[in-house]
Image (tube, rainbow, N blue to C red):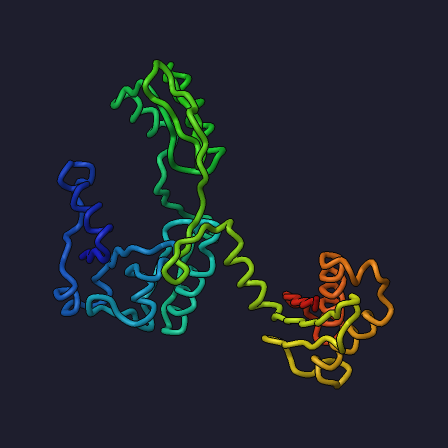
Length: 302
């Protein structure tokens, strides 16, 4: 007997049976009925072959789903290939099942493969049924979209390959590119929505990985340092390879540079900031193996 786990699986099978696509499908029983049956008499058809955390397979791997569990001696079969990028989630599920004593079978043997994607004859049949005047493929990688457009052209269907951000005008006899708009991921940062290319997330990741150093320097009326610079260090080890406090090493290297810097550099904020930044990053690399993000604060007395 068959148990369908996951809403998408149930909807797909129910629709296929209703429309006559699936014929002579085995008897479907509920999860509650399955609990009372011998395990060897039950097959679970579950969602989540790509490692989706909330899908039925992932929940079975973590413990149970709708009261059903996988146990030692059971077999779990992945009927599809893993889409590149989903390997981590799929491997986690495989290992979780293995820890339960469940035998996991995947397509690595090459003996089987079930595809969820339409092939050329399927797509051609869809074209024959729908008879579109304009074709804009929307699923797949760029090479898939391109082949789909070419496939439609063989039947005289006008098509266009539209990539992300491309706005298409469909009012004429054939599709035209009307405009290009900015696309990409967005993040909710607190209460503000930011774009993936805005640099905010990138800067935060760099600070998390490499730490952050704030350098403060006061210059007098003659554009000379008023005392030595001082540093605040965040997210970095307190002591480096020299067995001296990292802040002391940074401040000493910066003071040494200021002692030999020429007047032109000391007068130019941009040049001074860049020079101080390079020294901090180089010292950080030498001491703790990281080039930190650096903020330079130069105050000039007038």
